[in-house]
Structure formats: C-alpha cells, structure tokens
Image (cartoon, rainbow, N blue to C red):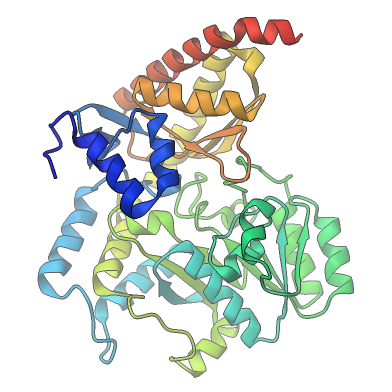
Length: 424
C-alpha cells in the first residue's frame, strides 16, 4: 500500500473497500472525493492530504473529543499492564468502571453489565426482560436501538427490518411523545417491556413534550411493565444533563449506555439496572456473557471517560455550548437560507437541522465537508442534519464552526434559490 501522502492513496483505499469491505461504502465515498481519515486530536480529524476537519459528527461518540489525554493515558497504561482478562479471576478495572458509572446514574441503578456496543446493550436488556417474563416488547415509531436481531426488532423502520424478517415476535410500536397511546397499549397487553429514547436521535432529534418521560414511568408502574431507557446516544452529558432521565427525574428499571462511555478511544457500552431488574443475571453469572465484554482495556477507557466528565465539568459545559450553538446556527440559517430550513432544534450537544427535503440535506452535508466541517445524517430521518460536537470545544473552535457553517449555508443557498423560487 502506498503512503498516505501519495496522490494515489485515496483511490487505492476506495478500490480496497470495493474488493474487501463494501462496494456501497466505496460508492458513497465518491461523493466526497474518496476522502480518507488518518489522524485525529481534540475536535479535529485529518484526511490523508493533511487537511483538518472540525468534527461535529461521530454519531455521539466524541463527547470528550478525539484522543482525550486522560483516556489515552488510562488505556495506554492498561494496555501495557493487562489489556484482556481470562474471565476466570476477578477484575478490579471492571469494578472501578462500574463504580464510576453508577456514581452518575439515577438512584437505585446499582448493577452494571458491560458489553461492546449499544446494540449489545439493547440485546442484554431484551434478554433480561425475557428472564422476567416480559415477552411483549414496546418501542416507539422512529426509535433507533441498533441493528442486531433483537435491537432491530425494536428499531421501527421497514428499510432496516424488511430484509431480515421474521424478527422477534410480539413487538409493538407506539407514537413517540404520546403517553396516552402507551397507556392504552399497556392496559390491553400483559407482560410488557417498554424501550425508548429520552430524545430520538436517529429520527432527527425529536424532543418529546414536557412531562412525557414522567408519564411513561407512571404508566409502566401502573401496569407492571419494565421500563428501559436507551441512553446510548443521549447519556453522559450529550443532552446537557448526565442523563435524559435526569431532565424529568425519572428512574428506569434499566438504563442503556454507550458511545461516549468509550471516551472516544475504545468501544464499550453497558446495561445498568436496579437490583430487582438485575436479579436473573445476579443468580447466574453465565446466563448472558461475552468474551470481550468488560475487558480491562475497555473498562479503563470507561472509568477515565466518566471521571473526565466529572472533573472537567463537561456536562455543564456541554449544556452551555449547546445553547450557544443552537442559537448561532439558527441565526446563520435564518440569514442565509431560511427558504431551505424547516427547523433548528436540540438539547445540549444533540442538535438537529431539518431541511425541506432529503436531497437538499444530502447536498448540505457534502457542502459542509467541503467547508471542513463533519456532521451526521440521521438514519431514520434523511431530511435532518445532526450535529453531535464535543463538550471540549474552545471558543476558537466554536467561531470556526460558525464560519464554516456559514460558508456551506451560503453556498447551498446560492445553488437552490432559483429552484425554490420556481417551485413556488
């Protein structure tokens, strides 16, 4: 393979993707000129040409930015000492990570089951619900919980489900934000486990009406349903609070954690449960296991990530940065291309920009890349551009973000002014 600085390097990587990884990914990469990311630090990612990009993407993983020194140091030390365990002896690193995590969660969520991804956390919750006899699964339209078979059954979108049917049986979907619909379903359906996100991320940053989570909790208690909050994307400061549950002082039976728990360095996720909910896993430690779950190197990253969020006050900082970004982005779009934008919305550092159609949203993402700014598209709502920036952004980073966003917005406005005017 040629060196990254070689002009043919990017094409060689794209050709390799076609041959060994994914022809679809290679085709998508052509839209950005086959850009290849090779380095990262803080809020920035560098391509193989040496160009830096301000990263507001990463699907919620980089709440601490890239390669935060405290997480890198913890992982490096663990790598040198004992990266993977035999699983036969007790591991103090897993215990320290669990203690750090439950020190942040709502009261009573005292037991942690570490896994490798958010989808695995959902799978663990589904199995734990089954162990309690909760055979009816309830999630919300537009919700996103992963693409493994159980998690996919909860992810209510035919685009991802249809190729893999039949999925799990007895799965029900209700409108997100509609507590009455949930109450009606629970009243008619026994043995339910309710799984939902406090804010729907992949559905385009959909915030429920005030009081919704509290009503959901009350409905679950009234009908003896198990309540699972999927906070894989919304947790650990992403919404400007430690957890989405904290926004309404809700205590679920099970809380799902991922993305930011990695510290942006090592994949790790977790299911956190009350003692009552966790009882089946407490009785039999081998009822649900994973070779790499709770590995020392992953737990070192998790412990360092949680401690860094605490010691650097990044949850509170994220709330302040998020409010500034939402106001600033809304002002830029109002000034440059209000005819192309339906709404700017968000909570903390989970920000959604809904465009008038999917095509313009896709073009806007590409314009942002060209301007040197990385963002997410939304898997369940292609009209929505999603920003999930780090809580470590400096004032200079924020100014640069606004400048690059303004550049892209101005460009997309110039491209679509005539078309929109003709359509009207």
